[in-house]
Image (cartoon, rainbow, N blue to C red):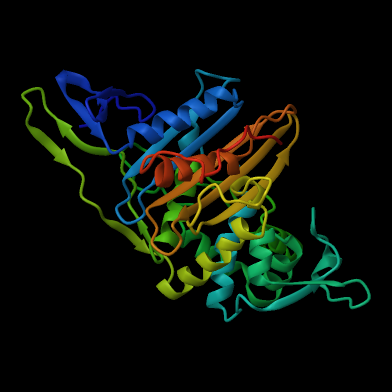
Length: 370
């Protein structure tokens, strides 16, 4: 039915984005035209080397935006479905859910003295003379504190349990979509140190932006993963409708209680943590006033050639999610923007700008800088 369909290519027809199919048929897409156009323009404006952003309605699975862009390789593959980028610290969301279900409270405090940019074996041990900084699991989520996640995973999880949670969140599985998407590869190592590093977000796990959007939508949807869809209906040449999308849940990943606790921890990323600067101006005023936002950043560098991966996954409003987002920006040595900027623009446009005009009471986002 969708032979020849590529979700990257479509055109505006009336109030909808439409993709032309064979034999005079067309696919009417679920995309929000304004949001799609705004995000496409942001990637062009900053000439992002490699990047993608996928926005989804958590309850239904309808895609609101689907952007794949590369100034470095304009004719390249679809980056939104590319499962090769490392998840980096986004995987902490999976680890946090597993920890909560293992009895670790978000208020559990861990002290540490290293492990900020890398995790060594000595960072897994308590050493009072060195461990002079302490943080709760919730604070570690917001600040993406590797040592806290590494220590807690080492003490409360094992390879089998974390692998089970990774699989439940879709890693290693071919998730259903309107066109085929490759499974996000990953393997939880048996080695103690590599296991702790993986739980904290160092390598071993990989993910496509579309999968990232489903991961955040799962938390937003009370632990239930929706089936992603970009085609709302297929219209035949004679104007009859041969297909219409019906929302469905792929699986129950975690309990609603665990999803809620994970969501509350993710809010610290925006209020106090690694994405605070992206979501507030220099005076500390939020770009989305009155909107609670849950998110998680991820940053990891690859070499030969250099690639600077930045992620942001999350959703808003946190208490009643309307939109979930996964943004990935891969920079070359000359950085342009980060994924947190793209995600903020997605949320700001969808929740603020499209609903009412911007006035003096709403901060206007400045040009993003590294």
